[in-house]
Length: 284
Image (cartoon, rainbow, N blue to C red; front, side):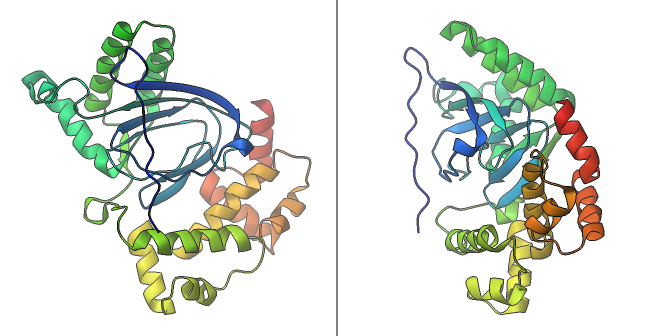
């Protein structure tokens, strides 16, 4: 299995692409893909899934991620809750010429691009500042957008508020056989999360013994399979908590068999109880 290649076209009259979209999250496809362009994704608000390289996690109340060239990733609206609004910038490393980022003034930005091959998630004041700057780009001319984009690069390059999503030594290669194996595992969890999940069955899906599967999953995804399943179930619970379903129904509909354990895991992952989460979502 090969990851689909996505063809990117610059905006007419511009050296890069700026995309703004606001959609209902349920209509957003998974669309795991790669392209030679770097990609800066700003999600304005809401909850959803972040899948970059081997890294899979969930964001809350928006996201800001810089994705390196040819680093596979899925759309950030997939598995999101409610309405999904995002601004995306896509550009090649030479979009301003072959030697532009070799200039002395560009060295910090060049290092930023190198780090982005692991995927970089930004938070805190950087998320807010860059988000505001990206929104201001929308009505501008192509020239003004370019100047604004360089300023955004500098803010990201100077920031210390970031997490690297993939470790360097296990950085994702879309040609590796890991891709097909992980896809089978993810699809198994998506299909069976409401039922008891046996780690032996998951290992069989991956064509590995149980000990090998546990070691493999931990190394590649950087979390245990049990933690991954719990995180997936809790994100599904977040979706159901936006409906009128009772807390108990949400618990059992997401594969948990014990209400107190469900509440405990939910608070560990989301930092708040299911009731507190529901109140927060309704307030927003």
